[in-house]
Image 1 (cartoon, rainbow, N blue to C red):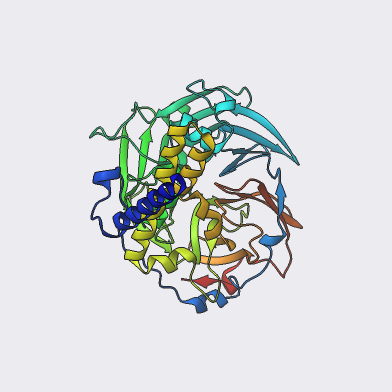
Image 2 (cartoon, one colour):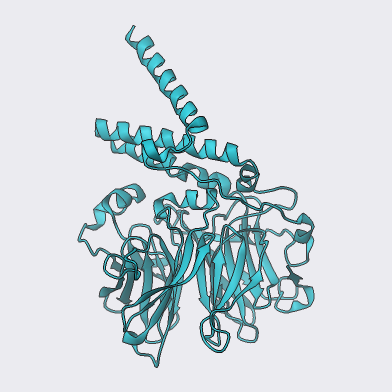
Length: 450
């Protein structure tokens, strides 16, 4: 009797979830959230992937996975004086020395303690810092974007840090707070740390980092490029209505910022000085995947940049997000269902005092369980400032996927060493590529111009 009643109640509740997801005009009135139906252009000329520089290879599949199951989410990299650093999901900044990790600092402005931040779900519910984009100033101070706190300035020699940009303290002129810091670049004035301008991507005004899946799934276009003057403390919007802006890079002449829009699969330049200040130019669009960070290569003869792709496009088919996005009603229904189911399980976990159930519900609610399924094809590309694709690295077998960044750390006449970052992977990728005629695409002769 009790079992039958329990089953019937669950069937009724499941049916109710389906009805709400399908027919309720606005679920935010009942549950505090809804999923919008932004348009998404999934069109792509698949024949372009047959270009010499984008044809499928297995180079990325040859990468090593360092520190597997010891770390989570080495999202971005920065180097200074030959030493490489990355940030992890538990709030640590670590130094990478050969095959060893050395902890530099644990970012803990609220004094929560490492044990409360070491697991991603615990870090989320406890409000722990999460280092994302990072850049060094010429003085060797490391600037790190944290979507929950702001921008940290770190002395990697002593481990001391301060919050140079505070999300709660430093707001836009209308009082609004930035919502989802992702990446940054620092523009220096005479090497004076107090006279820096920090350019940052605010990835979405609707969603925060835990809901990053929904920023992409919605085809969100509420992102912004902003700047913060460290001397005047003025926060300013530079560009609005960006479609999931993430990676940033300062050009060699320091007159432009390159910015990536994941949802539009494109990279553009933004003029920050000179007569054409404020001008925006598309460098490359219709990218063969969903791009994240952009980092300067070590090729000093030719200004080129590496772009890590969360997922790449195979030659003969659309990616999973692109298939779903062609059917907006189906997409909205699917996203609402997983949101409501996760919300329900998470709340049951709260009532029962079960962290395990809460964690499962959380992963369903924010779409974490789908990320590895979506990222089934690994891809990274290298481009020049004219939008020519010079090189590509593929992992068609899914060995190395879900890339956030490709960081070229070492280069000589014989080889180059690339470190491969990811928001979600439980390892640090490293790829050593021989520089020879077979794999070298450093000139535009065999390049692809979109």
